[in-house]
Image: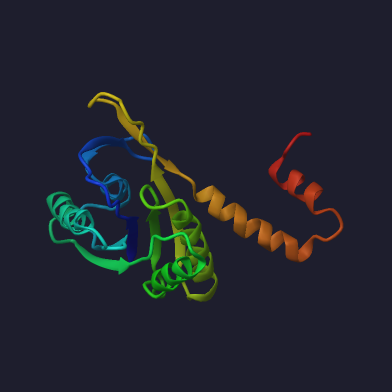
Length: 199
């Protein structure tokens, strides 16, 4: 099943125009994940959304309700929404708890799409690590993409904020890890050849 993860912001959010990764569609919505789902899902297709938040402020709870309402407006009852209670602190223990809670939500044959627009700076790193680990150890699980909305503050209401696909960074990490197992003589030259990097 297609499963969309989004980190929920603790701040008050409002609607903006988001352009999808393929630049085919502009969606006015509160949550960039809504625009991204529209670019991936076929009409009537059933999918799952997992909201990641610390739930330690009233804005968090209001934003979850707002997300549910927005998804219902666009997709009716073709989705299920669940939540992961994550720790957004900087300490290693908190990040490990977030990693474990994310990992526990992954299932066999999931097709995972992850929006990392909101959240503290360490959170996207934790997402990358949990996705990497899950893809290695959960049969059939595939990380389809990792995206974020490149939101520019101070723009007028007609401005379109692009959704940026950074899946290549996730894949690059996996590729480098794989290469390191086999290439010992000159790993940097090997990488330059693979990526066609000129000196």
